[in-house]
Image (cartoon, rainbow, N blue to C red; front, side, top):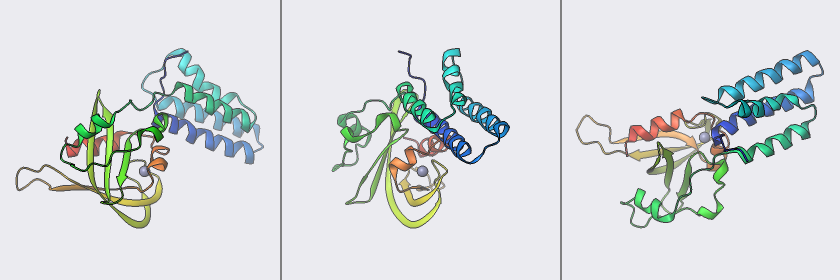
Length: 213
Ligand SMILES: [Zn+2]
């Protein structure tokens, strides 16, 4: 058994490439075009990683070896065995991350798909509070804020897909008069959809770090 090396957002990159490849397989008969698309798909998948062992690179290159859609699909299923899951987190740890929330509604941790989670998020529907937990440099970051539905579609700040958005507004700890008292982002309403779409963690990390917890 290999050590897991694929993070959820990198798996999303691979899925995105594979989807395009599947579409091409279905619609394009030209062999040359198909080979070019296969080559590009592999390059883009490899690009999502900072470093890879030869074995890991070979595994990603296998994406270009299939002729049938079902083969590519079972390859994608097999890749899940190589995914680094979101770290195990307990209710106690979560409570510690949000000390000010006295009636904190904690997530249903048993229902979380840890392998397909880049950031853990859940809503307290009674108060419209959205909570986010994200592992960063060996520790967990937690932020909470108000989530307001916009009933509009647009580009999510975290995953960059065009989807139904909510406005996530977080109060920050501004200490001086010239500091912002809140920071907001338009993000997906649907947490699972966002976690299945995010291909780059930089915008999410920038937002979480700017809030500074
Ligand atoms: Zn999103």
